[in-house]
Structures are given as C-alpha cells and as structure tokens.
Image 1 (cartoon, rainbow, N blue to C red):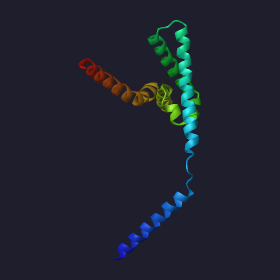
Image 2: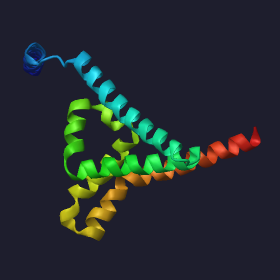
Image 3: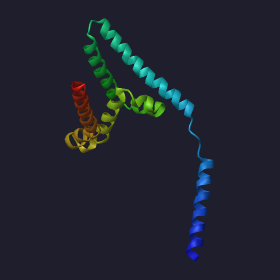
Length: 153
C-alpha cells in the first residue's frame, strides 16, 4: 500500500516536470531552418552545376566533366572543413549542408581531424574510414546488386 502511494507521488512529480519542460522549452524555428537548408543546399548544388557547365564549355565530355566536378566539390568540402568553415555552415544550414557530396567530405575530414592527436596511422587514417568504410562497402554492394538486376532484366 505504501509502495503504491510512493509510486503515485513519483509519477505525479514526473508529469509535473514534463509539463514544466514543455512550457519552458522554445519551439524550433522550422520555417527559418527550412529556408536556410534549402538556400545553402541549393547554392552548393548550383555552384557545382556552374563548375560542370564551365568544364563542358572547355571541351570535356559529360563523364569527365562530372568526375572533375565531383572531385572539386569533395576537395572544396574537405578544405572548408579543415579551416572550420564547413562546420559553421552546417550549424546554420543543417541538412542543406549535409546532403550534397560536400557533406560526405565534411564527415570524413571532421572525423580524421578529431583523432589527429592519436597519430596519423591509428588516429587520422583509422578513424577517417570509420565513416567512409560502411558507405563504400554498402555503396559497392548495392551497385553490384543493381548491376546484376539490370543484367537479368
């Protein structure tokens, strides 16, 4: 009987606490966040499209221009991460900075930089591939499966 009363009091305290937290907690600015994500993500993609268009005008084939554009965007994302600029962009834009390929470069370089004090072999190199490894493995696996399915069809 006494345990039931103590349990009811505890549940009442938890409900009061949750109500207080709900009343105090500010609501996120969803519209502002969506506009920031769309604007930054769109700018990154438009910038990459601009690079692609310039490379195509220089006479590169579609395949070569696409490859060079990807390499340049990954390089830009990595360099901006190294200088700490991409992290600030990510805080402002959220998913708008994560979705383009520059976000993948950011995640790899950021994890490498985080572990640089452990040394280049066991820190930077090993930790860099904790993010890239699963992406590369599953990307390769899915591309093989899609290739097999397209061969059958």
